[in-house]
Length: 149
Image (tube, rainbow, N blue to C red; front, side):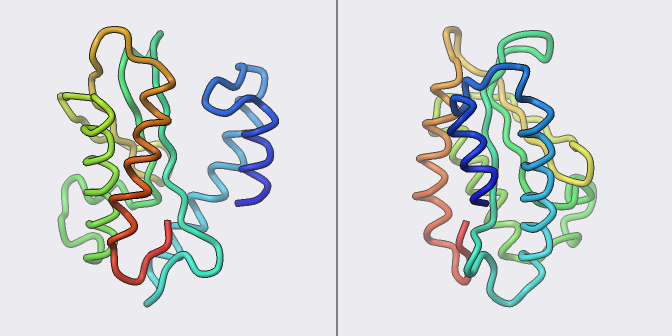
């Protein structure tokens, strides 16, 4: 987490330039892989928290708010693919997106081996919505038993 946090801060946060995309994607993929493993344990995110990533989009992928969650995308078709704590993590991510102003529709897909969530956003939304979603997520995920995210 320290490497990703440092690289993201150095790159300018959610407004990082495209030149940094490869490095940040590689670091994020490693954190999501770690988080997926953590969610299988009886106590997750100790001492290193489980990472959920939020991003605002306005371009080729469309306008909206996105989240990457360290969860098996099979969840879309099989609700038994994950444990209760993982369900709560996904619910916290969705709730955070709604709280940040993304009214929907909500869609779910995959990014590699991880669940990708996307929600439409109100006109004028930008990277600030991702920051609001991350703040809302901290509050919502804080109530999940045996999880530090």
